Image (cartoon, rainbow, N blue to C red; front, side, top):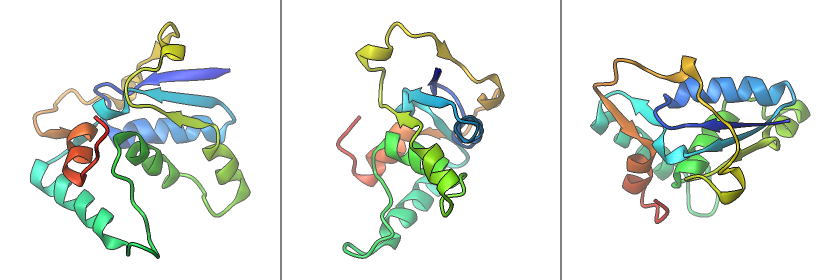
Length: 139
C-alpha cells in the first residue's frame, strides 16, 4: 500500500521523522508538494546553514548536498535512517518525493500529518525559498 503525504505547511523535521518511521516499517511513501514544506527559525540563519552544507563539499570528491527542494527533503529523511545498514538503504528505496503533484497522484487521497504542523509559525522559510537561494532552477 502506498501512502501519499502532502507536505504543504508541514515542518520539515517533523514530517521527515514520520516518513522515516513509515518506510522503516515497510510502507511505500510518496511525498508531494515538497517545495511547500517549512523550516522554522530565523530566515538568514537557515539560509546560511543550508549554504554552508552545500559549499562544504569539493566539486569532485563531495560530500554532495542537493539544491532542489524535493532532494533536500529526501536527504533529510536519509539522515534519519540507518544508512550504513542494508535495512536503511532498503527503506530509502521505498520513498518518492515530488515537487508539486504529479498527474498519477492527482486523484489519490493525500494525508496531512497533524503532528507535523506548527501552529505558531511566525518565523519560517519554505523549501522553495531555500532551494532558490542555493541556485536551483526547479521551482
